[in-house]
Length: 112
Length: 111
Image (cartoon, rainbow over all chains, first blue to last red; front, side, top):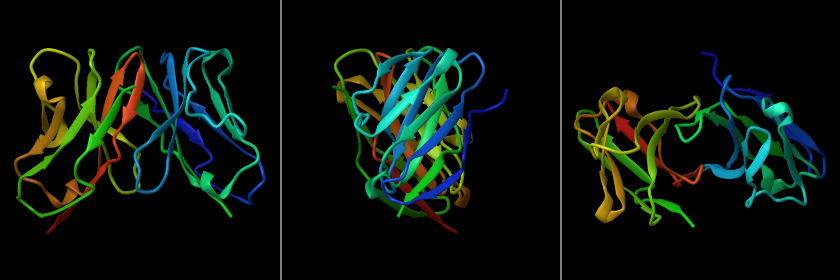
């Protein structure tokens, strides 16, 4: 089966600019996750969707980050405005209910 | 709240040496546990998982992990590592549909 697709792979923006990331999960996977992975740290959950509803967004900085999952399939994560500390790899993952998650290649964001 | 802690930040060993990576979690209820691996330049991949049953689980590439409920631990082991095992290893805990990761352990295997 096809894996989790993410784009772009790399992005460099200036602080205060906006950026959006896209994720296409594995077909049939109801759960979709967005993680932020800062260099040297483990992935931190930003938001989790079950179909198109939000299950957990407790660690999402809602003043600048937003995410949506229209029609319960693709998802976009947006940062507006970006800060230097947002430099990280943004990982998208998907899973069937209560099974292991499959990860995409990630988007490496550099904010300068 | 659930959390995962990994004891070692960076482990360096020689080929053919044995590897054990520690993972402890805090959560009082039923948990699903995972070890993921991230090879250089690649995405996170599942090594093995524990949902229930035999607490000793075997994964890909000769890895195994033991779930010890009384110690809240899920340590990863491999009897003889290869250079290709150089990677970052993450322990993860799933409960109530939430998947939480430890900080990771970087393993460097010297030829």
